[in-house]
Amino acid sequence: MSQQSIQVGKQGGMANKYKVLIGYLLEGHQNSRIIGQTGDSLTVGCASTGGQTIFNLVQTFGSLTVEWKMESPLFGKHRLEWQFPEYEDQEKMMRKLTNDLEKYQQNVISASPFRDSFLN
Image 1 (spheres, one colour):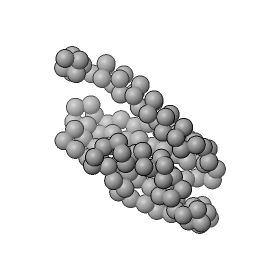
Image 2: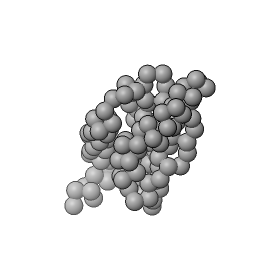
Image 3: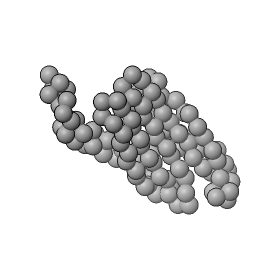
Image 4: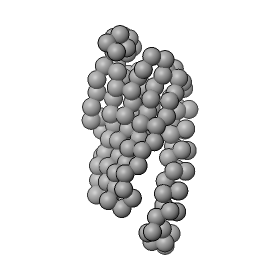
């Protein structure tokens, strides 16, 4: 793992290597911020009265793992994970995340006992 951290460091660190993707994640909510960073991982998160959302980005040899966690008093805990090739276009990564999250959240809302209150 230390070799991986050294490689990422040579590329300017996680914040630089994945700055396009991280920029999109930070724009997702006004309270979003980088809440943790190591040599081969970075965490973006936000919290509000509706709950908290966290994105963990972890660089492994040849790939990037993105983990999404959401915890809400109304909807409970949820988690999704994606694997991308290390040098995948970051705009393409974000489109995949956005599409998958929209579908997932629509399914959560439609399965919720509070569904009718969201539709009005």
